Structure formats: structure tokens, C-alpha cells
Length: 240
Image 1 (cartoon, rainbow, N blue to C red):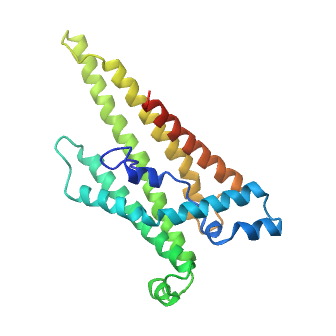
Image 2: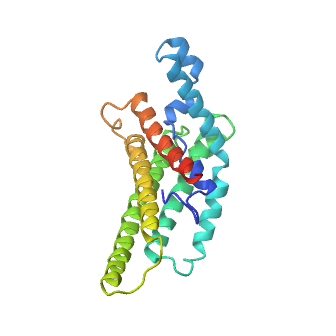
Image 3: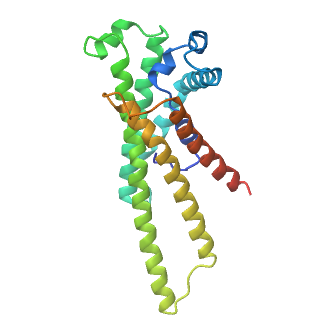
């Protein structure tokens, strides 16, 4: 995701790095799954946690709106125009995703009338199509992370080539540059791993053909674990 608004550690980022549950998981109670014996207790707990996170994300529109509004004012001085456009696309994708998910969740909980959903959803009062569009918007947002990372790598490569040329010409460069390069590499790799972990989940939930072959709660948990542990490791390292 452009996983950052103006700052990579923004509240919007942290909301969006939570595990995205399948729409079916959000509608099936953990007690039903457990009593039916269809899943083990640990999986039922995962469904319950997933549903709780979905509910908490009802408030996710506010920071996303603030992010989108700040970007709409145009790129700040010194900001790469391409990165700004990618950020605009990503913010729009995530805002649409969150809005559609909120509407679907509220409709499934009886807060929003089926008539409203039917009006919004071509006469269909169920939320399946809305969830599908929501997850496709999420996929768009995740995909923007790879565009951002490619652009950042391109710009960083140009800076390093210029710096090498300056050294070859005997000109002075900034001190501690090697340390700054290492920080960039670590941050870039962290963002790449997190985006790569979310991508298969986004692809699965965005599909109309049953999703990725062999996908199950185990793969879903593995993706969430990789993304979450990588983010936690980066945040922990930043406190050192």
C-alpha cells in the first residue's frame, strides 16, 4: 500500500495492515463453526478475531479520508510527481475498499436496509457483489505498493549512481551515507515482503472463479503472520 500517507507509520497504514477477512468468514459465527466441527477451535478463534478487526475498521474511513484530502492538494515541494500519483491511486482504492466493506458489514448486521443495498447493487439485496468489489479495490491498493517500490528503487538507483560519480570526481558527499543506504534498503525490503504477503490474499478474495487453488485458512493465516511479523520486526527495530 502506498503503505504510508505522508508518513509510513501513519494511523491509516496501521489500519490497513490488519488481516483482511473473507466476507464469508465475517458472516459466520465462531460458535457455529465450532459446534459443527467444521474447523478446530484455533480456526474458530481466528474467525472471531477477524470479525472483530472488521468491526473495528468501521472507523478506518476517517484517516483514509484525511490522507486522500491531503494528497488532493497536490504534491509537496520536492515530492516526486509519479510517487504522488501512485499515492492518489492507492488512497482512492483503499477509501473505496473501506467504504464498500463498511456498507456490506452494516447491511449484514441489519443496520442498513436491504432496500438500500438493492438500490446500490443492481436489484440484488445481498452483499456478495459489494464484498467482491471491495476486495478488488483492496487488490488495487496492494498493487500500488509494487508500483511505489519500483519507482522508489528507480529514484534511489539514480541517486546512488550520481553519488558514485561524485566520489570518482573527488567531490565531497554527505557523511553517514552508507548508513542511510542501509536504512533505505531495510525499509524497502520490509514494504516489499508485506505487500507480497497480502497480494495472494487479495487475489484470492478478488476472484469470481473460486479464488486461488488450494487456498484455505492455513494459507490465510500464513500470509497474515508473514505480514504482521515483518511489520512488528520493523517497528521493533525502529525503537532501538
